[in-house]
Length: 353
Ligand code: HEM
Image 1 (cartoon, rainbow, N blue to C red):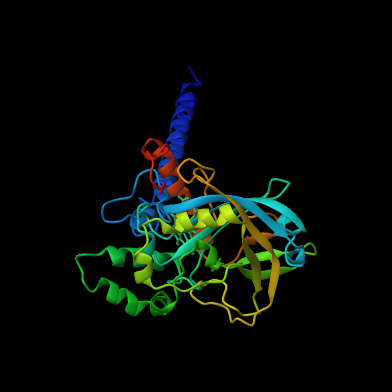
Image 2 (cartoon, rainbow, N blue to C red; image 1 turned 120 degrees about the vertical axis):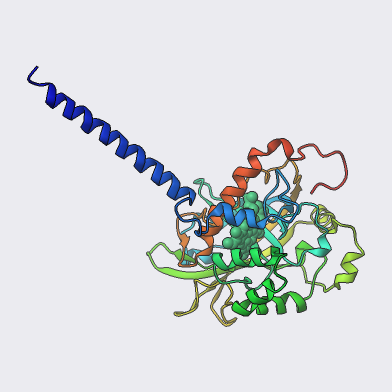
C-alpha cells in the first residue's frame, strides 16, 4: 500500500515522457514538411512550380524530360590528378552512362522550341565511387539563387498579373544578361556540337590536401555549325535524337573535359557570373560517346544525375545550387519512379521521347 503514490507518480511521469516524445516527433515531422513555415521554400514546392499549365507528365523527369541516353567512356589523361584525387582523374578509361537532354518539363516538346540543351554524366571509378554531373549549354545561369529560380518559375506561370515577369526581371537584372545570350547565341542542329558547362562551382582536393574552387565544361570535338531557328523548325520534332543516333552509329563522338580553376576572389556562390576567360584551364581527358541507348527503357531511366554525388577529391562549395538541385531531383526521381505504370516502357513505334 505504501508504495502506491510513488507508482502513480512514476506512471504519470512515464505518460508525460511519452507525450513529450510524441509531440516532439509530430513537431519535427511538421517542421520537415514545412507546415510550421508555409513561406519556406521546399524541394516539393520547387518541383511543383516546374510543372507546365496542364500539369506534369507522369512517369517523366520533372525538368529536362526529353532526352536520349547513351553509354561511353571517360578517357582520363591524368592531368587533373594534380587538382583532385578523384579516382577517375588517374590516367585510364572509365565507363560512362549519360544523357543528352532538353530543358523542358515536356517530353514531347519540339526540339526547335527549346533553347537550352543539357548533358548529364555518371562516370564510375573501379572502386565504385561515382562522379555525377548535369550541365547545360548556356554560359551562365539566369538567376543567382534557388529562391530566385523558384520566383522565376512563379512569375512566368502567373497569368493573373500581366506584369509579373516584368517586375521579376526588374528585380533580377541578371535575367536580362541570360535573355541577351538566349536571343543572340547561335543555335546548332546537333547535341554533338554543343559545349556543356557545370555553371555551379565545386571544390577539388588533391592528394596533398590542397583545395581549389573549380567549374568545368565539356567542349565538343565537332565544329559548331550555326543554323537559324527557322531552319530548325523545318526539321522533325525529334531531329536532335535522330542526328546524334546517326552520328554515333558512324563514329564515336568526343568532348574534351576542361577544368577552370578560380582565381582568389572569383565568385563561387553565384552561377550567373561567369569567370573571366583567362583563368587557368586544365584539359583532363576526353568523353567518348560510343553507343546511343534506348531512352524509354534504357539505363538512364532509373538514374538520378544528382550533382552532389561526387567521388573523394570533390565536394560542394558555397554555391547554394547543388544542394537545392539534389533535393529537387530526389523529389522528381521519387515521383517519376512511383509513376512507373505511366512511363512508356514499350512505346508503340515512333520516336521515343
Ligand atoms: C534550383 C535550381 C534547379 C532546379 C530546381 C532543377 C530541377 C531539375 C529537376 C527536377 C530535374 C529532373 C531530375 C530527375 O528527375 O532525375 C532536373 C534535371 C536536370 N537539370 Fe536541373 N534544376 C536546377 C538547376 C540546374 C542547373 C544550374 C543546371 C545546369 C548547370 C541544371 C541542369 C539539369 C540537367 C542537365 C538535367 C537533366 C538530368 C537528367 O538527364 O536526368 N539544372 N533539374
